[in-house]
Length: 385
Image (cartoon, rainbow, N blue to C red):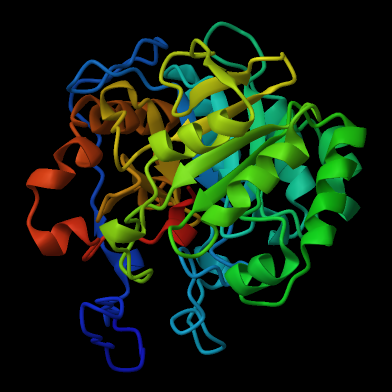
């Protein structure tokens, strides 16, 4: 299938060295086969590098009401962009079935993503179904959701009542002009802050706020963000601008290393390093020296954490991706809708994970230039961050 994008744009390197792909990468998938020898779901599944399966991120929609340049730039995701038809999306029942099988293999945390997951109609029903599931050791999964916060104020209490544990909110600055420019739909920062307050009041905590830092765009917002959330109970996390997908025009010189972020904050608000809260945690934790809270930094560009990565990603149409930087997913929907039994599905998932050897971030520096810029990789808006 071809997508009728406008012709690819080629700017010079001084501009953004941007190439917009003409082929829709969503259709690039790998067939899934049921292994001849069943793979039992023991909760102890490991990949080719010995990494366990602990975290499942589920994209429930490929749509978003923001047009952030690093994720869904407006010149690609415009009014003519061909989003997936509803029939292509996994139903709530299909998502819950797949999630149950992943939990049996060892998953302990489920994160709902998008696009913007709160745009998926009746998402509370899905949350109710997922919250009723149990991990391999019989405990409820840690059920979380990442949102841009635009709909959070009106939905927070219903999400909590449905069984959601907590939320992570994306917020790239407090300056209203900067924030409106970054979301590119003129959405006010005050409405996101109201959503965070509503989530806190509803008990969806501890709340995390993620700020993507892009050099030359919003690094001057680092200290204001730190001051604002310090002492609030919210954990603010700074994320290096990543080379995800092929449409955001990523350049290494626009990455502000996390070490610089920590140094900048420490000079004004002294920090002490904290131990990881869980194995495979992506964020390096730093606490304020006066005990008024903590921040985190996620350094997938300058300090790769592939060796501890225990995450799988399920796209909104049922493709299983083993890395955020993958170019192809494994088509679980074909099995789901083809009459496969639970044992066959579990065996297929087990076989896929056992063969996993992805470690893109560790290899980035040694890859050809076009690969390191994100050519042919799946978009973050399609499989979630």
